[in-house]
Image (tube, rainbow, N blue to C red; front, top):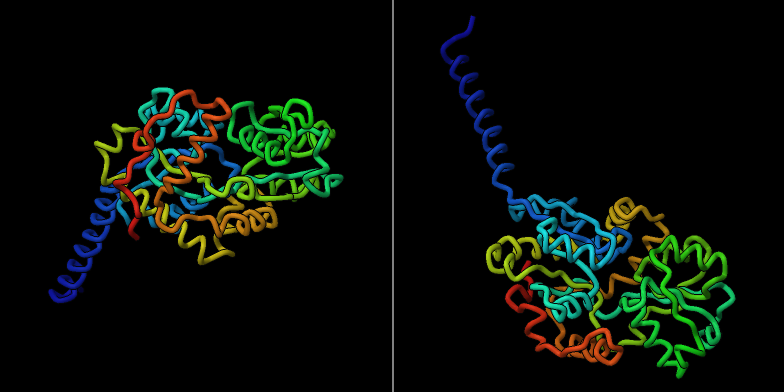
Length: 325
């Protein structure tokens, strides 16, 4: 038979449990949704800080419910951001320069990966850069960042890019692998996914391309002017979550490699190789290097990718950096 004391104890426990459950529901309901678009899934630097931020709970700690949404390239990501399918895009740093010049209302928010994380992967027959003369370099598409780097490589080697070396658009990583295997190309310029080709035994990463570009920015986050204006606090909390993920990634290699390998579906050896290439380049606070931006803009103008020089202030906003953790 229940006594008054036992009844009150049970009732109090029930009220407390209900309050906890109600608090959990309210907490879940109060999380603000944020959609992070990744220019591609198969790039360690593009996806890992955000993925780690989601899996380690940093977004939720900052009151956000985050989704990472992969796209098939820069133009598709841009369309997604403009259409509202993503609130923030993470992409190659030349995209805001190119797309803003073409009239789209986007601007960079911060640097995700500094310097140049792109790689030159060559077939086993290529022992040094000089061996590529007379050969073919695969890039994603003509006019892309990978094409720009291939042209810069030819210039560094004093090669005529029309005669001494061929630069052809091949497509994504699977198409690049097939071209190398058939010996249609002897090298490929790609992001850190060059490590996948290396792991498949199709070649080896000969160099990281920051040797070509003493000033460069690899990856940035960007958004639209409208989102920057109307969702400033959400953007700020999102960037904080991403950089908390980046800090965890820098400090915890083994767990970060496992998280990344599962997300981008790479083998752990390939992911570990990408981690080794990327860790020194992960930005600490997101600040934009304006000298690097100017160098990038100069390069794109010289190669004809850009037609007009806009003020750098049109391409980025300084209001979110340095990101404070």
